[in-house]
Length: 79
Image (cartoon, rainbow, N blue to C red; front, side, top):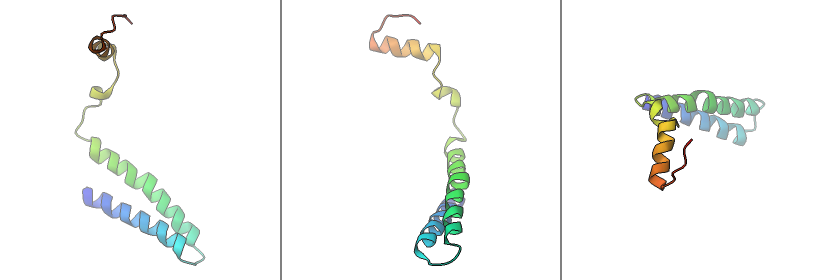
């Protein structure tokens, strides 16, 4: 998975750079495909790869976690 992400990132960045440097009729398409590849392929794959073995409930803000944070700070107010 890591190699696919790196390969897609390099391809997207190369496409953007070639679109800016080359003087061809389809240079704007190269830039566009590079940006689309970066934002619709690379970033979702990277996010999935980094978060696939984690529990999202650990990062949610609940009443229990709010009370725990308030106790650590010494605040005695209730919700």
